[in-house]
Length: 299
Image (tube, rainbow, N blue to C red; front, top):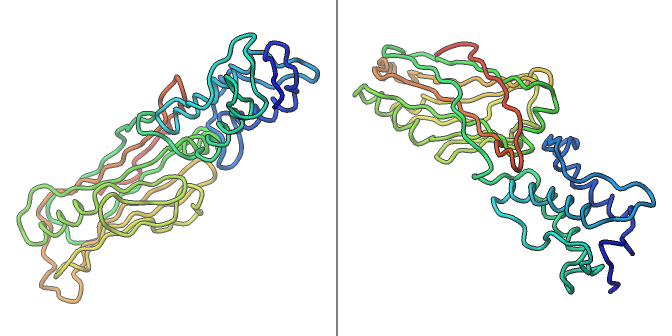
C-alpha cells in the first residue's frame, strides 16, 4: 500500500476527496429525494482542482461523518478519527494509524443508514388532542393538518427520522361497550407514521404507506377493530397530502351497531385522541425545523 502524508496531500487527489465529501454533503446537506438532512453548517467543503488535501480538511470531513453517524446510531464512529499534521495515512484500510479507505467505509455506513435515527438524537413533542364526552354511538372523527415551510423541509423532517404518533384512550364509563372501546384503544397503543410505513407497538393493521407514499386522496394507514358483540366498531387513521408542504390526517372512531341493534347503546366514557411529533433536535449533530400543526375539526 502506498503511504501518504496528510500535510502534503501526496497521493490524495482532490477528485478522491471531493468524491467522499459530495457523498457526505448529500446526506447532511440538501440532497435529493430520500437523502438530505438539510444541515447548512457543514464543516467540510470541496477542494479546488490542484489544491492539496490537508489534515484540517480531512478532519472537517470526519466531523461531518461523526455528526451523521451519531444521529443515526447514538454513538460516535470508531473506524475513523481525527488526524494531525504529519500523520501517515495508509491509502487502503487501517494498516497504519489510519487508512484513507476507512473514510470511504464510514461514509458507506452513514449512507446505508441515512433514514435511521437514534432515540437519543430525537425528541418527542406534544402536539394536539381532541376529546368527546359521553353519549355517542355513531362515527366520530377529527382532522388535523401539518404544514412544512417548503417541500425540502418536509423531506428533511422525514429523512432525518421524523415521525408522527397517534394514540387514543377512553376514560370513565363502565358498560360492556365502554370496556370494549377501552380495550381496543389500549391494545392499539401508539401508531407511528414515518417516511415509508405506518406501524403500531400494539395490535392492529398498519400499512406500507408513509410520507413518500401519500396521494392527494385519503388512504387508510391504520385500523383496529373491536371484539365479540362489538366487532363492528373500529378505530381508523387515514392520511393524504395537499401539494408538497401539507399532510392531512383523519382519525375516526366508528361505533357501529353491527348486525344486532341491541348492542347499539351509547358510549358513556370520554374518548381522547392524541397526536405527537418526533423530530431531530440535537443542534450539535442534526436538527430540523419544526412543522406547524392545526386541528381542523374536533371529535
